[in-house]
Image 1 (tube, rainbow, N blue to C red):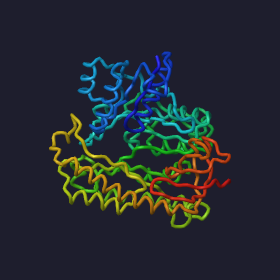
Image 2: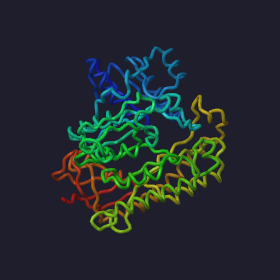
Image 3: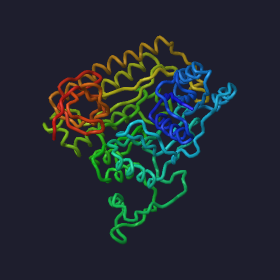
Image 4: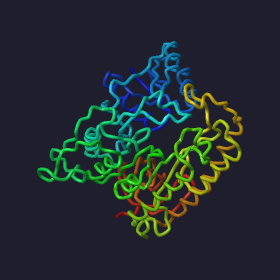
Length: 442
């Protein structure tokens, strides 16, 4: 059959869709670019917000005359309702070993863990993906080495909370043997040939160092990080490893301590700000090249930081929302992914009265977007006349489109550029949402 996949939600869901595509291809089915021409429609659900569930359900209704499959983050109650409508539910046989049919030849999502143990009061992920389970480090490194050999230039590690990665957690306790694998050298010294067997679980910082030590010119990034688990060790590792991009996504969710407690986010606003300050200072210390005229220049932004914010959480007063605006003003985020709260069945917050009017949620979201637009423009203006590394993602007409090493969209004249190329560009134009520039050969 001809099939089409609709994907909603985070990068984890996009990674899941790539795995689903592989299994469909291996079964003899063919991907098409137009859903109307497909015989089989797969809808990959996101359960973070009720609005995302409604959008996914709308696709199932729109194509109700085709064969339908639902996948992704689905609550048991949603699965039951869909099954009653004769909609099949996709269940991957082995999440970590299923091979993905990658949509991007040069940038690859690599899941390192799945599930979550945090049980934030607004989030259904622990009920849809289960508790945290980490992938074996040896398997992760084997996959990444194959990707790099195939020409991939960007590795993006995925997990609901990558900071809590522990090799072997909820997995059989298999020791990681180095057997001549030089990439393990930074962590294992002693024994024959200067190497020995690793018998202790590898944490996320150590995994990053192992990947950073792999040969080749590539970028390494990850998403998402929980503030409560962002350690000094993790910050130092990010700053010291030159292949890790100078970009940190650190979800705040709110700028008010009382709301954070109600969300079951176990940190304070003061702690969050301290983390940001420490990350920026540590990065500046270990990556001083970002302050030279050869790159972003003195005074340029050394570390790009983005966040997630929820507006209109139950009981959020006008004053508490102002505290969130103040957090945005103080931190000066490069990007904010904000959402209007909607209750999800089974979560703790679903028991609270959803007492913020829809119009007020919209107004608060617009207020954050307005402030973000102003701040992002001011940050991006600092890039003008500076040079920065760029990954070319696609060519359209006379232009090349990609992103900077700080995760900002950029457009360059095509000239001799090719998709998958890492080049250097001098920035000539800055807007709130993207940059423009000219290629500057090294």
